[in-house]
Length: 298
Ligand SMILES: O=C(O)CCC(=O)C(=O)O
Ligand SMILES: [Fe+2]
Image (cartoon, rainbow, N blue to C red; front, side, top):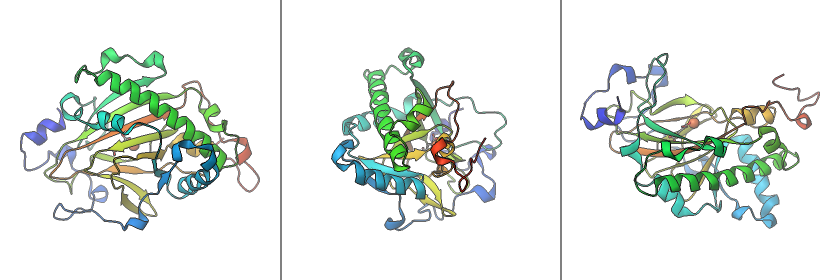
């Protein structure tokens, strides 16, 4: 059953299968706020200046710092047309989302419906399996996929350089991207203090590019605290994923994150995952292995 139907049915209490164990529940009181971190503690906002080569040294430096400290950061002036960000966020959400089969082993369910699109390589892209409304929907998703692949490639180049690696190092070890776009819809929840929209996890691929609407609810775990990522409509959130942690031999960590719910507004996010090719064998870059920094994985 869709969570959206539960929510719109007007239930006052969430079904038991959605109730998180006490240690995982978010600290929401009177449904207003979560821990509200001060702005200076919030996730870095990095202007990449359209990946302009003149700014490359400076941008590489701040990206390196953000990767080491946060494993996640916002970028602006990324070159993706802002109207495309709005198009993929806008209006497509609730009606076409359907729940994917929940693993029966999962004891507690997420307060979320989602729709997954296989977008790259092109051999996996079959728009006929995607919703066909609004009429330009498939076109928007395809265009968004292509634009975000470019951003992901440019970021991998900068991240490689920030570690003193050749520009193409990480991209070469990742191989041809497997890209998936997941649109998540989190209906309003009558008991946000008992539930999670999405349980704590790190993404398993190489790099995730995420945009969200104005509601907010994404949190990143840093220094033993959950930090709420303030929505920034023109920015793209970059989240380092597990394969990046392996390739960088732990110099950069994948970011642990989760989504919380709220009782008043449904929320939408669009996550674009870039995973290594199925044939890629991921291991730490040899340049990052030394006596003082042995390989963290074989
Ligand atoms: O909805 C969000 O902000 C988070 C989505 C996410 O982390 C995921 O789909 O892996
Ligand atoms: Fe995630």
